[in-house]
Image (cartoon, rainbow, N blue to C red; front, top):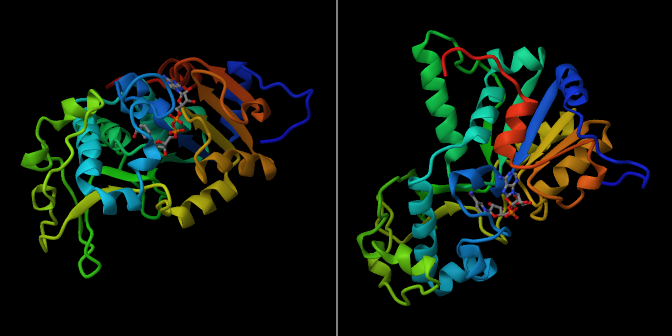
Length: 304
Ligand code: NAD
C-alpha cells in the first residue's frame, strides 16, 4: 500500500462504523494471527515449531519428494495441534459477519467473504458450529442460491489428504488422529525439534482409493493458491478490505489490500503489532484481533 507521508491510519472506531455501514462489498484477508488465541503458533511470531525448522525446507513439493517422512511428521504435528484447538472470538466475529442477517445489522446492503491463508480449519468449524446454533433457534441463515462463498481457504486444508499419483489425485477430508499409526507420538519430537528420521514410506498416510502415498492438502511454497479466480473477482469489486492477523509478507494475499485501495476502496488492519504496508491503511487497530474485532463489529445476538 502506498500513500503520502502525511497520511496516518485512523484508530477511530466510530469513523470505522460509518465506513462499514456504507460498504457494499467487504472482504477479509486473514493470516496466522487469527488463530493465535486458539493456541496455534504463528509463522513469524514467537514460539512453536516454525522457530525450530526452516519452513522452506519442509513446506515445498521438493522437500516432500526428498523426505516424505519428515514432511509428514511436521503436518501430523500441525494436525494434532489444530484438532485440540477451538475457534476463538475472532473466528466467531468473522463468522457472524459472513451470515447476512447478522452482517446487515452493521452494513445493511453488503456482501462478505473471508479469505484465509490458514489451513487449520478453525474458520470452517466456527461457521458450521454457529450456523447449527442459529438454525436450531429457527433463524434462516442458509446460503441463498448464487450467494458468493462465505469462506475461501486459499492455502488449502490440513485435514485433506491428496493422492500423489498422477493417475488418481483423489482428495478427501480426513480428521483421523493420528493420520497414520506410525506417526503416533512423533508430534512430541517435532515440538522438541527432533524429528524421527525415517518412517518407511509404506507406513505414511496412503490414498484411500488407490493406495499410493498421500500428501497433505495444503498449498506449499512454489504452488498455486486455490480459488484464485474467485478471489481476484472479489478483490476487484471490494470497497472494504479487512486485513487480519497477517504479516502481509506472503503473496498473493499480501497484495490484496493495496489492490482494493488502488480502485478507491478502504483498508482496515487488525494486528497485534505493526505489519508490512499498514502505514497506508485507512484504519489500524493494534491489539489482539480477538478483542479488536469484537469492538469493531458489535453484533446484537440473543441465541449464542
Ligand atoms: P505470519 O506468522 O507471517 O504473521 C502472523 C501475524 O499475526 C503477525 O503480523 C502477528 O503480528 C499477528 N498476530 C499474532 N497474534 C495476533 C493476534 N492475537 N491478533 C492479531 N494479530 C496477531 O502469518 P501469515 O501472514 O498468515 O503468513 C504465514 C503463512 O504461514 C501463511 O501462508 C499460512 O498459510 C501459514 N500458517 C498458517 C497457520 C494456521 O493455519 N493457523 C499457522 C502458521 C502459518
